[in-house]
Image (tube, rainbow, N blue to C red; front, side, top):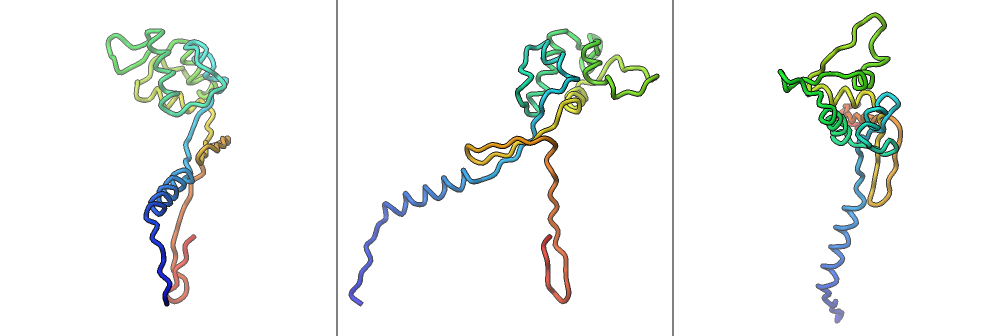
Length: 157
C-alpha cells in the first residue's frame, strides 16, 4: 500500500515518437509502374532515355511528349492534335491494327499518353520503408464484401 510509482514524462513522449515513426515506415505503398517494351524502344532512343529504368505513368507520357516536341510533330493548324511520323506510328500501332486497315495519320494529344502507356509493359511496385519489390503485371484488384449468414450473423470476405 505504500508503493508510489515514479513519473517518467520525458520517456513517455519519446516512446510516442518512436511509435509514430514506426507506424509510418510500416505502411505499404503500391504503385503501378511501366517498363519500355520493344515497341517503344525507338522513342526512348530518340530522347536518350534509359531503357532499363521503370517509369511512372506521368514520367512515361512525359517521354513521348518530349519526342513530339523534339520532332516538332504538333499540328500547326490544330494544337490539340499530333501528327504521327513513321517512328511514332510504329510505336503506337504496329501489330495492333489488323492487316488491310489504314494507319492513322494523327492522334489527339489527350489520347497520346494513354496509347503510349498501353504499348509498355505494366509492372507494380510494393514498398515498405526501405524494402521494395517489383513484379510483372498490373496490380491485382481486391474486392471486400460483407454478407449475411443465418440469423443476424455477418461475414466479411
